[in-house]
Amino acid sequence: MLLAWLYASKGQGDEPFGPLGHEPPQPSLGMSDPSASQQIDAIVRKLTGWRGERLGRLRVLIRAADPGVIEEVKWKKPSRPEGVPVWSHDGIVCVGEALKNAVRLTFPKGAQLKDPKGLFNTRLDSKTVRAIDFHEGDAINASALKALIVEGARLNRR
Image 1 (spheres, rainbow, N blue to C red):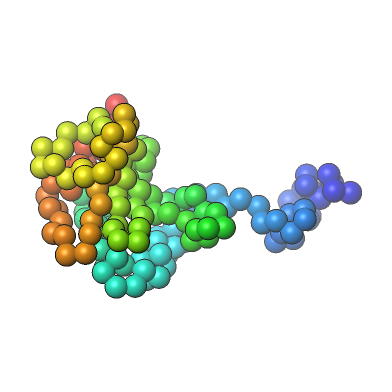
Image 2: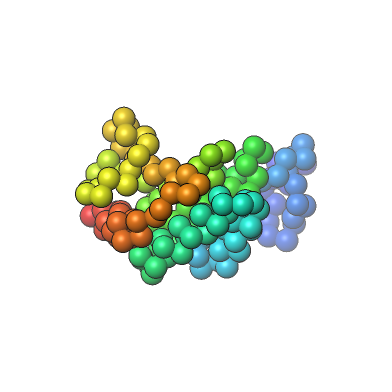
């Protein structure tokens, strides 16, 4: 019976929860699905104070730098049920997270990116990843950040 439920054809066994009451894993959602954008809206709204404002501002800059960027929400888990905002273009360009005292943009291929303005200020010991922590009151170098976004997307296309 359990196998019949697990492998039910379309229209059968569409209960919202799988065996033992566990929810099935949530797939990542791309920009073509408006709910990804809506989910990021909700994540930004949930952050109170300067962190929500900062993540929202970074999101605007990312989308302006690369109009072809796709917004996704990934890595939903019990400790972070809302997931994590991700911006992709032929692969992940950057990931946004709100930490206790900072808003972080992580670039999975950041070590390969040119950073002439020295924006990367954390994860500098990693062989692949680089990140930028924005603290309350920090200025955003919009043109340098946009250049990193564009270069990150270009790197994904190689």
